[in-house]
Amino acid sequence: MPVEIEENIKTKSGNLRTEEMILNMGPQHPSTHGVLRLELQLEGEVITKVIPHIGYLHRCFEKHAEAMTYPQVIPYTDRIDYLASMGNEFGYAVAVEKLLGIEIPERVEYIRVIMAELQRIASHLVALGTYGADIGAFTPFLFCFRDREKILNLFEITCGARLLYNYIWVGGLSHDLHPDFVRLAKEFTSYFKPKIKELNDLLSYNRIFTERTANVGILPVETAINFGVTGPMLRGSGLKWDLRKNDPYSVYNKFDFDIPVGQGLMGTVGDSWDRYFVRVLEMSESLKIIEQALEQLPEGDVTSAIPKRVKPPVGQVYARIENPRGELGYFIISNGTPNPFRVKVRGPSFVNLGVMDELCRGHMVADIITILGSVDIVLGEVDR
Amino acid sequence: MKTIEEIFEILKAKFGDSILELKTDQPVEPFIIADPLEIDKICFFLRDEEGLLFDSLMNLSGVDDANGESKNDESGALNIIGGTLSVYYHIESTKILHKLCLKVSTQRENPEVASVFNVWRHADWQEREAYDLIGIKFLNHPDLRRILMPYDWEAGHPLRKDYKNPEFYQGMKVPY
Image 1: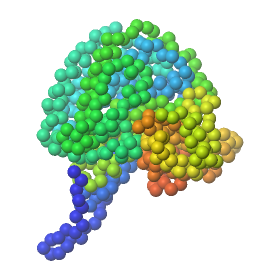
Image 2: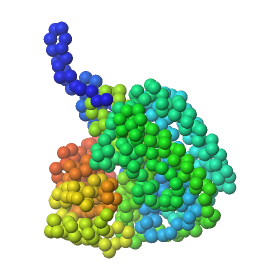
Image 3: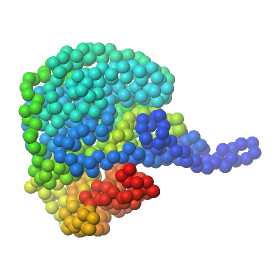
Image 4: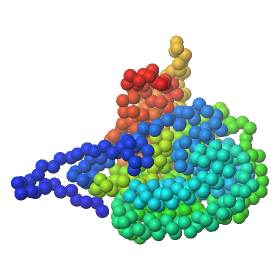
């Protein structure tokens, strides 16, 4: 809960003079998950203002993209949010396909959805595991990484890479699934289902954990919308907003799944615990989608629709998908040449970090780590 | 839920000459072109008016249109004189579920656009990014600093089409 600031501290020898202190947290700090510097203005131990300083990882993806042809941009998109590379490629492919106006074979769409949902689970496992580790619970971190390893193995037999895939291409996929993939993926879903309960027993309802996270960093839903916050953060604040349902892309309208929202089970709606727990619930929803997609997976050729030469007509498009961290948008302007004229990425981490100051004001220094962990940023995407 | 034509008519009736054009001839995405110095008032109206309620800014992107006169100097480097810089606003309503794209264009020599900071706080960092990478000045933005590049970067704005890498940055060779 936010704390009141005491103006004058009285001691036996009279009033104690207080003054504002500035504390730099980062750029090298284990709980910032990368290179982020937070300039904290403190009144005693209470935070009055947080100024994030970003850009330590700035590579200017957008400038690179202007020098590449459309398909050549895809390996660069992998590196935006490096914990959710499949999602980044997916979004870019959707944007360029909209610009080209081409139809995609159904098998491709299904495989894309399976990959994106596996990636969502993998990404949330990192978020939840490191969140526990930030707060002092190290065991869940190891459990989460053990399970994530199994997803990375699935990606490895699909495309050879474990982190940066270059798998989803404009108009199709780089190649078809491994013959064993469906069997292994089904094995994974049945393996993983009980593990969510294990995580809940270990961390979610743990007394120490809930005491640290409930009622900390409360984000009201109006503030969230005004700051452009999306993804599990917005849903944690109680708004049922998921682009997979609200603005369906690909074949998401064919699956049956729910959108979990924060309900304030441990404290207030929109606190850090709600944001954490929405991610836990989302993992089981993703499992539902994967199971349905594996059952319905149609036959077909995955490379037939890949255009030989990608040269969209003059025009512009803003396409967005639901990435694990929120709304990932690509704004692409084409001037009719094989190179994009402008590619702008709306990264959810970049936008979600902007609300840090609102969330932290009035809290103690130790709560910063709780709040930052619940925002779940990836610095590769913040800085691009 | 309103179509872009209906929104254009509503805006035209309210703001007259500040709403310049409705562009629908391009594929995929139609947009409305507005006056860069009036955009904040237009956005306030779009956010608060009953039946529009655009409460969320999805994305704000600065673009170097590179439509001026291109010249190559002695060293062969590109220089662009004249023309425009643009800002695109993609907004939506989480209540009525409609979307809209607005565009403003401003002179390259003195790029000034009214800030929509007070309409959607999301615009805070997005405008700082557009200032940092394209060099568009947002009037009335309370904290218009560089955001991704170093604060003491003196070589201009990297996403301009005629940007040249400097030879040195603070005594360090670029590119190293």
